[in-house]
Image 1 (spheres, helix red, strand yellow):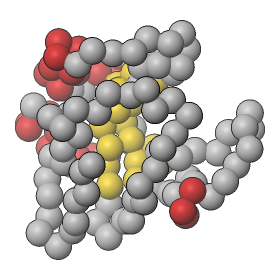
Image 2 (image 1 turned 90 degrees about the vertical axis):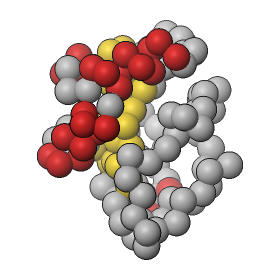
Image 3 (image 1 turned 180 degrees about the vertical axis):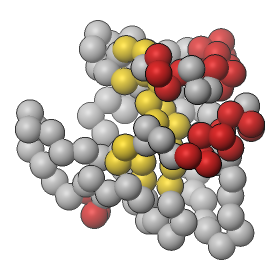
Image 4 (image 1 turned 135 degrees about the horizontal axis):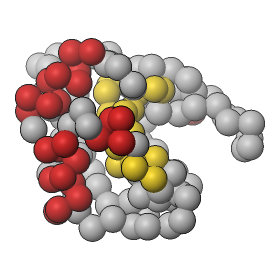
Length: 123
């Protein structure tokens, strides 16, 4: 898993800002994070569907999640499985979302790398 994570981190290919503008809903600048790559994600499942191109890049990570995390299936909305990339110095405030029926167990919600100069908050 670590090898896959480090390979993905080396290229950043496919990562998109986590909070994206959408014409189908009102827009707010979520603490300066709207379309901001300081917090970006690589989706393995998005809008309830697998993203095969991304899964092929990290099959061990993907299979580990599938085998060990119960997923909530809600039509075209869930599950969402993603890898987050938070740039050094980025500030991510505590937050909630439209579908916070998500399961984020501590074993999944951990950084691949944690620099000594950054902080990490885990509730």
